[in-house]
Amino acid sequence: MSLRRFFIGIVLFAISAGLIIFGYLHLALLQLPGLVLLPIALYFAMYGYLGIFANRFSQILKDREKLNKDLF
Image (cartoon, rainbow, N blue to C red; front, top):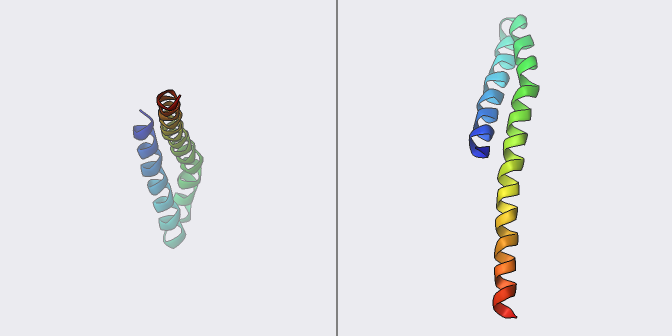
């Protein structure tokens, strides 16, 4: 779920950046939807990345507890 959210955020970010660049080069009004979409894209990407990080971190803690049980 987090990986999907992260990829959605990355795709939205690319679309937003494309709109901003295209608006800068050709039609200035296209920058506005890009700027509106940018915070939404960043939210999705950050939320997904935090979920991925939390999952990895919990696996590290689980492996560490398993290692401590084996040693003592």
